Length: 424
Image (tube, helix red, strand yellow):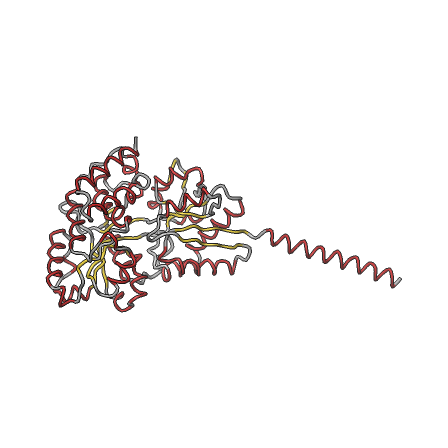
């Protein structure tokens, strides 16, 4: 009897071990990998920390993040990623042109919780035929970041610097006092960064041509450059009063080595630069502000505010992977932990509902928030430009201009021809 009982227990034990083995294997097979390919270098470390927090409570999900941005061409890198066959689960799109280019890979997010949380007006550029193909990172604004202490020492009241004439006056005064203010130049103008010139700077002068409407921009067969004279004035102002040579000046030199060390008074950048500035000199970072880039006689005293990029989900991935991707995005913007990161660590100006009680902590984001609340803003339409036109055509032509290898009229003509050719 004992022998039979022992034999039975042995069989049961073996069965239990097999069962446990199957359970472990099953759980392991349910592990979901979410590959994120994103462009925002300014928050890559904090974003990685956020993903780790998510994985602590979602043990079956593994998130891998690759960041390509800053001086690199994210669009080209994304195309190469897809061509290689190593397709990400979550990636970035910028607006209607990207929706058109990537439509075959885009999951419709209209039923996703995160899309329902987004501020509706911010989804226009990624909505097509009733489908929502992306959800916003955040709201951002850019202009001329200035050092308040330097302005104060020079006797400049920044609150009055709204028009082009006032800006020109301030620049000339700062230039005349460079030595006593310890400045290398008034500006650090990074013409090497074609996103600064061909996308952001150009947008200020192109948005009014299309009534601030990204879809009109996207559908336009031609571009007039109606405000090209105003464009040239501001481009020349920054370039002529900048640390030289501007064609080789990049983001890191501009923000971290020149502005953050008090070597220049102003830089054209956005609220995303706060983290970099704060990392170099936290005291200086408390004492900075942002001025609008003026379109003389047309739009002065208005800050350029918009959505920098949208999160998209690859519809070719399996259901579990897509569900995990959507859940992560929703958790990031709606959970208590996620919100803390969004506001306090990412320094984002939220593009989602439910942040009424969250405090915006940095001075640049506060400036953007202030202008946005007043309605003193210019819309971002550069995501409606033809593919790669802003950086690879206009930005590249501006590099030729600042190095004396093209006239401004030639820059405009080349850009017009490329736009029309793309939109045939």
